[in-house]
Length: 88
Image (cartoon, rainbow, N blue to C red; front, side):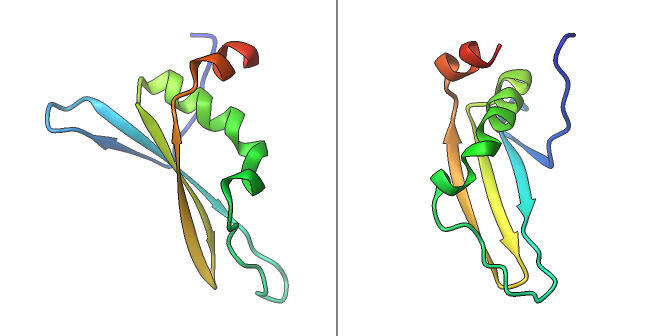
């Protein structure tokens, strides 16, 4: 295989097929003032990684979580075959 990665988690459907992957990004600061990202567009630099995980696993989507000690947000990222082709 020419592509490798390690997801933070996977979700299986009732038939045992990988339905989704989970990727968690933790934002911490020295003062614990960091807040989770509020929009998916704030996390644009993680989208290539997420699309590669979706492609590698055959999943339909990825739940991308922004986590801090002050809260968390989850963004659902759908498979984007055109973006993946541009990346490779």
